Length: 287
Ligand code: ADP
Image (cartoon, rainbow, N blue to C red):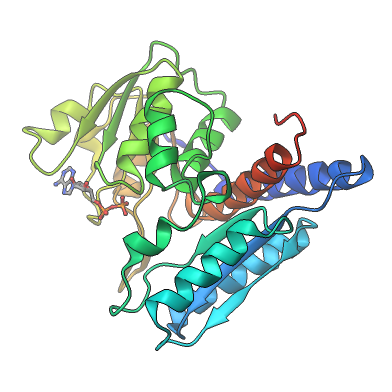
């Protein structure tokens, strides 16, 4: 068997186009265009690239780019004051503090200045709590992107066996919560899991976010399963994921490639979150 390759680039493009249409509808209906405040501290080249992409796609979707750049030696109180100002500004629908921040700053303390309703990364304690309780809130972008890919592929989740490899706050934990909310039977595997391959073989839907190149091979995949690879690693052969793509494609029903799978979905979901935040703040029904 040869697995279908899930085209995350195409799905992400469709999500961004949908966000763009809904932004236009919001504005046409008398609302205000959503505004995303990206906050970048210092000049780390990788962070600059990420922030530039977020700003470009935000503008493309018809949202206001409210970027703020602070020098790398800025003090904690100044950043906190900026975040408080953005939190109070009605033009700002979402605030994204680009991580990592320079080592002399306390990122946890800074993130607590972003109110839950503007936390478009969905990583605050408040939004994590809402997700854990199955209540509406802003969802972390990468796991939300995985859910959007599964929906695009019409993967049935109710009653399905889902295995998530990894338990990070960024991906594994919220991923498991989202699958649970979709009525899957969810197992979380991690670095202490005994016989990882056997646990993974139970999965109808296998989501891998362990940060280990090639961790999941063909022996860990049930024939016909849907395999989602969240890992991304720069290797001498180019970008690779946590899944051994060539081997797994011979067994799985569908699999995301790296690059071009989950990666492009993350910014698309950031834009979707910013629109949701704006819609809620403007007292309009959100979808
Ligand atoms: P991400 O940023 O994708 O969430 P991290 O590198 O922060 O990834 O987290 C890696 C996660 O993967 C950890 O939660 C850890 O428990 C899990 N993990 C690490 N090694 C293994 C392993 N050998 N098998 C399964 N899970 C693992």
